[in-house]
Length: 288
Image 1: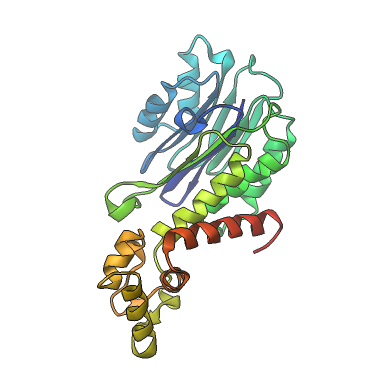
Image 2: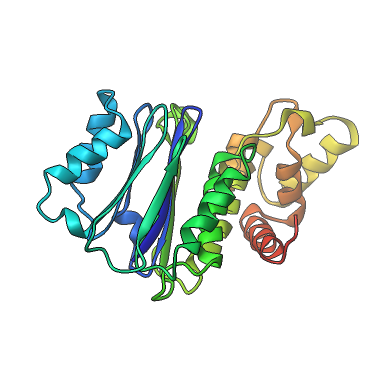
């Protein structure tokens, strides 16, 4: 009922998953910074998530973790599982009683798996997309693999939900957690497309500025910004940005062009969602 990729990039681990199943993000993925990632699906065994991560934390290799989990499970014939650890290849398992088409593949730092798919082309497309973009940002690379599987046919029953979960040491909001990205589309006619829109919004709101793109906040630009902030009813740029959830993009004495664009648009919330929607539409039609 599901297709997923578990993968590693440097110190980051992630899972991207889609399914004709309500809120698949609440069931399939488990990720821990410094350990690895697990996807449990088909007749998902939720015990695999904490048990798999515990094994990875102790240094057990993904293939051995998979073998240990399924060996102790009397219903292993109905399970599907993907695991990636701190080093080496990922591992995938498909029980002999999973519904057709079901299968998976694995390589260095990744595993791809799916069941009740239109065919093996779904897995092939996901693997090819993953391998073709080694320099892409990790979240984008995971999403591209998921979108490739969706485009190749995906779940043969249809579409309903998708999720993207990524963890890396200290990558959470304000550095207070390891959760870099936890986005879920629980019930939607185009869940993978909607997941892409959410990732656009996430990057705009919680991304950090490109140091090379920062503008000096002085002279006419400083006057413009001061006037725009005042027109919005705020005493300072800091106060406006805090309300609009753009505080991660503030740099003393400078301004991120992303922040400036939202300020000129009249409000980050409307502007961000418009830009995210436009970006998702452009990608869907082959745009940049």
